Image 1 (tube, rainbow, N blue to C red):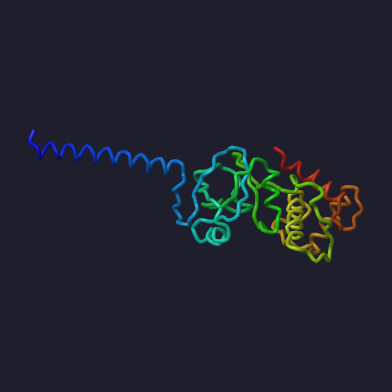
Image 2 (cartoon, rainbow, N blue to C red):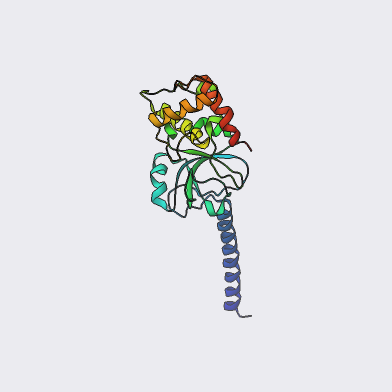
Length: 228
């Protein structure tokens, strides 16, 4: 073999080995997800399988702009493609979005709800990585009674009170006492009427005030709907 040909073979072998190693590293990086960011959000895409863990879903949508504001506020978020993740509840209502930005996974629904039921996560929701779940986790079922505020008509609600009003409205809706879609976060007249009807049918004083006894009845009756 001519020296020039031998040199070409050696160089080719070296380049092949280098490219092979580099290709393998690139494949590994893509496989573990650490370098995957198809929407160019600056955070990792990490699809989630059905592990029965829980996520706090912070933003959803079909394109980068739908997630961008949430990501700018919290660079610790990650996101997933719902088409390649657990087939669970990726929206509180309506069609399933293509992408979801999230915190977690958390080991339990209690842990995820402790994060979600804070002023910083107003409007977020918790989903369980469980195949076929139709609705997000109802956090009233996993929060301690001591965390539940007394709610009444005319309340000058804080952000946190508004979160609890909305959670209560959701349970009343699921029980059929409040019209679907009426999650206003305000203790308005339709909510008062729904609470009074629920209290009356639960053997409680129908005064429209949601205190410990009414919360207990809501949790007992409402959370049976979500048990699985």
